Length: 328
Ligand SMILES: [Zn+2]
Image (cartoon, rainbow, N blue to C red; front, side, top):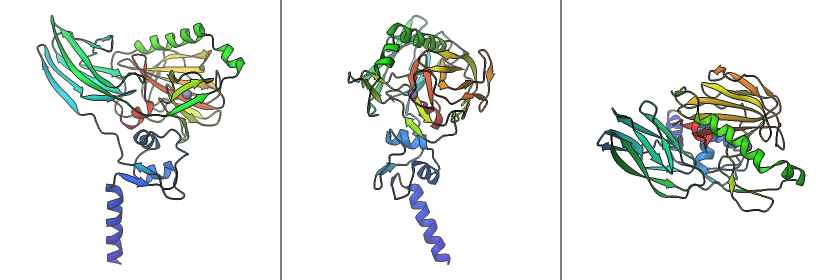
């Protein structure tokens, strides 16, 4: 008896310590996530899985839990100290810490940023070419620069066909105006960070139907765009909850995105919820983690009930799954 317990403990220890898992008959990504004390999102991120329902028996998955915290470089500039990662992936958000008495301006990829307090969040655009980039810091008449390498991520491709009616509805000016409004909203909002720790999932569904970052082609055209959020399949009327504290920046029907909500979370971070059947909040309202904000639907340009959830940093879309696993 004692012996079999020991063997069991040993076997369990080995299972938990290993960093890959071979899919067995009857496994789902959800059951594997539960078994390893992780989440479906984490496994999808680790394994770049497009469709969590499509895992095959014999497939080898990485299961070593949470993505690693980035390796930081600490630098001494003439005006203070800086802390930033050495590398970041396409579509990933990273944090820069600036400890300085002087007012510091940060320049990266042709954008200028002013840290709030000592913190600044920057998202690497999904389609930014992999390579080594310069990040510059200006303060008190002196300048300092550091290198940050951008890693490529492979998220797969998706060819979509739009009906002539839908294609006709997508007038470029209308589409651009809607996006510009969202981007502006995401660049404003509270200057202090309202969340602490990882975010909660906005909907009770483990059916991720489209991951962030998959490259998209419409009607046989080039793969010029990508999916800017994370789609959860869920029936119409399923409640949608705030994944983190925030202020409602927008709550109204939009042309492309249908009934839409934008929450502002501070430090230039906002989250979006599209295609809702109903909206349960008003602009200016403060929400806490877990507050009901609306209900899943299929409004706007949508092919069926689902929640499109996205997170933008200074207007740049970033992988929402990462915020659920380890918020920056
Ligand atoms: Zn979507």
